[in-house]
Amino acid sequence: MRTQPTRSRLLAAVALLSFTATSVLGAALPGHDVHQLARRANSDPRLSGVTRIEDGQVEGIEQLLNRTATKSWEIGTHLAALLELSYPALSPFADSTSWARPSPSSSPAPTEILSNVAQILENQPSGQQQLVSDGSAADPASVGPFVVLANFTLDGDEQIGGRSKAQVDDAVQRQVDVLMNGTPRTPDGAISHRTEDVELWSDFMYMVPPFFAYLGAVTLNSTLLTEAYTQCALYRTHLRDERTNLWRHIDNSFPGGGGRADPGLWATGNGWASYGLLRVLATVVNHPDDGVVQQFASQSRDLAAWAGEIIEGTWAQPRTSQGLRHNYLNESRSFGDASGTALLSAATFRLSLLSRRFSTAAVNLTAPSSLALASAENSYRALVPARISLAGVVSPVVDPMSFREQLEGVKADGSGRSSPEAGAFVLLLEAARRDWVDENGGTEPSAVDAGVDGMWSATAGREHRLGAGGVAVVLAAALALVVGA
Ligand SMILES: *[C@@H]1O[C@H](CO)[C@@H](O)[C@H](O)[C@H]1NC(C)=O
Ligand SMILES: *[C@@H]1O[C@H](CO)[C@@H](O)[C@H](O)[C@H]1NC(C)=O
Ligand SMILES: *[C@@H]1O[C@H](CO)[C@@H](O)[C@H](O)[C@H]1NC(C)=O
Ligand SMILES: *[C@@H]1O[C@H](CO)[C@@H](O)[C@H](O)[C@H]1NC(C)=O
Ligand SMILES: *[C@@H]1O[C@H](CO)[C@@H](O)[C@H](O)[C@H]1NC(C)=O
Image (cartoon, rainbow, N blue to C red; front, side, top):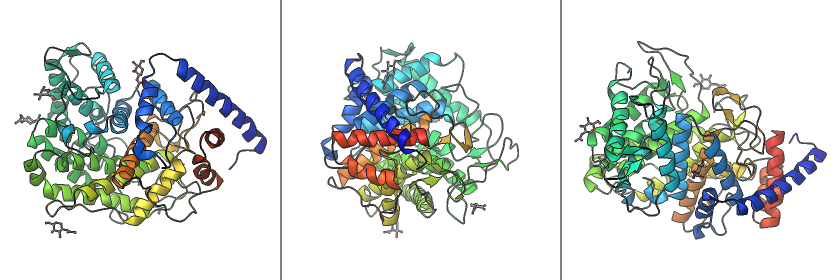
């Protein structure tokens, strides 16, 4: 890469120092939620002998997210990552159906999620319908499932964030109400991603349908389950590019349209769309009530097929020399983006899992092709550990506030700018791949040809199996990469 040898040695020394410092400080810090989380995620016996992310990297991402995930969709994505990585039994992707019956006795209690929900409720201005203030109509809904979860884990006389259980219920209902009745729509009924005019963004797919679906599933409200599916169908009609099956980012060509269109095939947007479809799918197909499963059988097939279109479309596009996908998937002049690549890889593992588990005659789901699965594994190996510093900085990534630009001012130690959503996507990917490995008897997916990448990920892959000594070398290399990127 572009890093000079001397600079690389210097950085290696810095990395070793920071590695030591982190371990020493980590051991001495009180209130080490993050460390417990990392251990819970990684001491998993299912992962022994399998290439995986390092504890230190999970800790780094967690700490960075706790400090930097402040925008509505960043909080929602952070909480989803915590749930899927550390409380998988409470996620609709769980390998049982008990997720749909959360209760005050759910064990282990999702403490970090509950403390975040308490903050959300404390910060919500009184009278505001959105759970988090935002010009986006959709993004605040991304925290919705976690407020619903908190409600169900609350005893009748308990409070959270200064609100009684009845007030939490009311806050959720008001968020649903403003989306259903107080947000502009297209003539055919797609709810706008924005509050002020009619714009459909692929991002919407991760924010709103999974919220409607989760609330509908845990309160047995089929109006909401149906609305989740309907919004998915409408968004696909408007955003799908028929040539590639990938989704455009923003369509505003409607009466009352505003803002700026983006017809490009944005990687992260395709990640939002496919992962959103899969969260809705898991919610209906993995529901304990067989009536719900049967009622939504044909919709489930659609959701899997639509996620599959995006997934196959993605891996048919070129990869960069680093083994990443381009920020605009079919534009080989746009930079390689670790962020969108991570979410699209996570989606591929999730579709594989769901299609394998629910291949009954009634609900047969499309599986990803073996090429798609191998490409997701290739991407995983390109990302982990080489693209993540010990402080949890993922690089190179798209600027979360400016979708055409690469994020500048990134520093490996976390003191510069970073993308919270990228950190969360890496955790979602780790959780999805862990679950895949588990269901496949502890076997790693096979990657396609070795031409994934240049020296770093290849070295990283080998060193990764060498234990602690090798790990320090790899982390040093990763740090050099992040800084040099
Ligand atoms: C995040 O930090 C807060 C304190 O600011 C702490 O209460 C909380 O437990 C932390 N969450 C995690 C996941 O570390
Ligand atoms: C809150 O939880 C109660 C059960 O404890 C449930 O009846 C109610 O529908 C829930 N409301 C929301 C919005 O989740
Ligand atoms: C289902 O949810 C919708 C939207 O919040 C609500 O209007 C409706 O009353 C609910 N239905 C039932 C049976 O609770
Ligand atoms: C990428 O795909 C879009 C939609 O099909 C198309 O308009 C655009 O020209 C393509 N870009 C390149 C570089 O092929
Ligand atoms: C899946 O089920 C549907 C409806 O039962 C059927 O039409 C279709 O052929 C099935 N597909 C496969 C691959 O079995």
